[in-house]
Length: 414
Image (cartoon, rainbow, N blue to C red; front, top):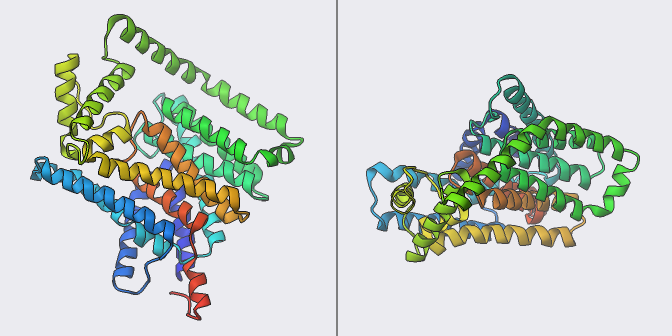
């Protein structure tokens, strides 16, 4: 099977499995990325010279290098070496991108769309069964409610953007996929992802405002009815979660008790900010985060709890690898945002606009959810970050290696 066909199937798989099969997406993408690295290292395939890809790769390598250096200067040990192994994920970016781009852009776009639609309907099915039958907080195949909500949110956003960008007979099914993902996210009880999904809806409505009247003419009542049904199904979850937030804030403000979801976040943000300012350049090392949180919660707040991160992903990155490492990741988000806005403003090509929306989906979801949870540091979250970043960059501003070979008069790669 030739690379264009393989990449089409690989794209579908990467976009479809994360809410349903969880870490399978990590095994799938990492296996493919390692093969891509072998292909480029043995000169069977060429490394892409796309400028935006190289800029992102440079920032990811800076993050990995700064984090490794911080680990080495802040008390490394054999017990904590597992904290730096995940950095290898980000080193695979340019190789995966290069081989992924041996494809037709339209084929990759369609595979991402249909994969996301499958993921959205699958996520809703998991959420309905877990919430109404098993009476548990939905986690899908991810094994974690927050991760399940995050990947479901992104799948639904892809469906929404695809339905608004292109003329397609699958538009109704895509809107249905979006509605299914909304239901899954609401039932997951992950409040930060609720906000991310709301922001993504507003972003899509603003970007595609000129198409809305045409698309929804005569069918607005059906859309409203669908979302009313979703709201009714999830109303109990919404009310309970906001009541909990109100109760946490009341206890914190009236009694000074930080031992709640809201209070613990505020306490950890204070601890994290203090430690980042103490060592701003290279940070405190990823291996020391748990000890920093545990010791400071006990000493300063009288709370005997331990966490692996500061419940603000960007702050966690800054504490662990300083402004060099954490700043590099923040720069990736800024660059992705600039690429997306640039292509939405200037490009008329459906592939470029869809790629731009993938990048905006990545930035909004990880930016909003990561501000109170994690940005990087979980295998599924890291993998989905890479998949959206690679495919979004390639479709938005990259050049197909097939087109380059055709212009040079070379045969297509096998």
